[in-house]
Image (cartoon, rainbow, N blue to C red; front, side):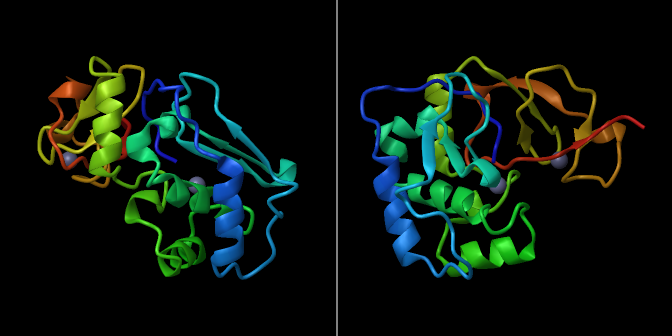
Length: 187
Ligand SMILES: [Zn+2]
Ligand SMILES: [Zn+2]
């Protein structure tokens, strides 16, 4: 999933197992996935930069603590459905995405480069207003990396291009709607 900086509000943890059970029983899974009684569901360690993860062999799904923020409770089932689909498809291929689309999952939760919802972005900004991101000077798409990059924007050119080298920007300087880009390293 998206890699974005965060902290969490520990006050209202939603019931991950109830969400899993509901999705398990209602989405049109083409093959069996682990039942809600046996799957392992955990909150990620603090400061994780990953929104969610699934390890099919260990039947383990982890969810970022940022989803304990009440503003994101509504999006949590979409993230959970994404991670559950990895029990069937390890990657974000066409079948994976077709299934999520059929299941009515938001486009923000299709793959690791999906653009975050405005709400998710708002919550992230609130948690880490001073965090640095990297932004394309042309299309304004951003990329979250903790380290300095000399890469250029993957949305604007298929290979490294000096015109689109990403510039450092603070989280609270970003304007919605947020679009994510990919990195084209220097060649
Ligand atoms: Zn995924
Ligand atoms: Zn760009």
